Length: 275
Image 1: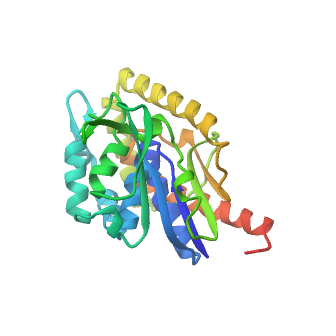
Image 2: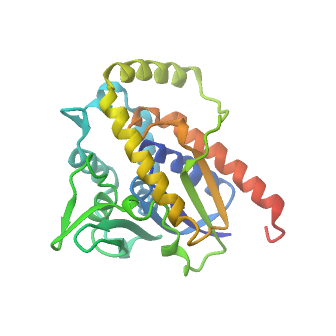
Image 3: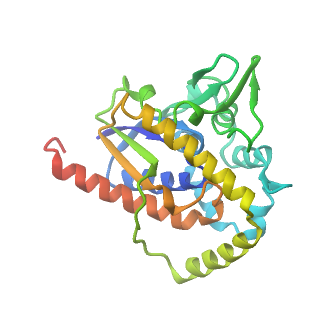
C-alpha cells in the first residue's frame, strides 16, 4: 500500500517520526511522498534522500558532550553546525531529484504566507522550515525572510492531497497527554538516566518559558488548521513525552514513535475493510 506521509513540527519530539517511518516500512507500506514542517521536514528530508538510517545511528550514538557541541551561548542550538553535520551524513541534493516526492513547509515573513519548497536545494529548504523564531536565525532566500513552517502550518496535509497514494498518514507531535509504555535495554536506560541528570542541571527557567511559549503557539495554530484537511490515519504523539529541546532523548522518542505507529495502524486496520 502506498502512503503519503505528513510529519508535523515539535522539536525533539520529532525523533518519534523515525520510529513511525520504520514501523510503516516494517509493515510493508511504501512511502511515495512526504510533507514536513520544522523537525518533520528534517526527518522527512532524510528519509526522502535515503539517509535516515545513517542519521538515526548517529543520534543514537551521541553522549552528553557530543550533543552539547551543537549548542552556543547562552544555551542555544547552533543551526549552522547542525546542518553541516546533516549534510555530511546525507550529502547534497535538489528536492526535485529525490526518489520520494518531498515538500518542506516554511513561513515567508515578508509576504506573510506559507511557502512550499518542492524544488531547489534540499537543505536550504529544510533549514528555512525549521528556523524556529527566537531560537534559530531566519533564512534569507531571494529577498524573503523565511522562518519555521509551524508559524502558519504545523502539520501540512495539503501538499500531499493530490499525490498518487492509497492513504495519507499524518504524525501529530501535539497529541493529548498520556503515558506510553516502551521497552529499552538496560544500557540505553543507564545512558538516558545519566543524560537526564546532566540536562536538568543546565536547563534553566528561561528555557522552560521558551518551551511553554513555543508549545502554546504551535497548539493554537494546530487547532485552527487541522480541520482543513483530514488524513486517513493520524498518529498522535503525546506532547508530554519531551520538551522541544530534549534532543538527548532520541532512543526513547524513536521507540515511542514505533509503538504509537503500530497501535494506530492496528486500530485503523480494525476499522477498515480495504486493508
